[in-house]
Image (cartoon, rainbow, N blue to C red; front, side, top):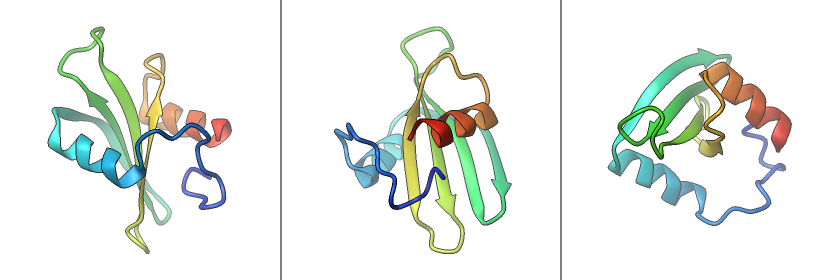
Length: 91
């Protein structure tokens, strides 16, 4: 699972808390959001236009613990649920 504490990205250059703060401070657009079980998900775009050098992220929040995780998503992913599927099977 995306929030599984035993599965950590191998090449993490910026820690999760720093990345979450950066996304909150910068020009981030929420493209999709939903709740599933005890998790809340947000599909985010960093950058102001589609087809430019935008970066995409999936933010997951455990509603019981308020733990947040963010993972960068390839630009080819077009929806939040597709991003979750990608994140779940890539870690």
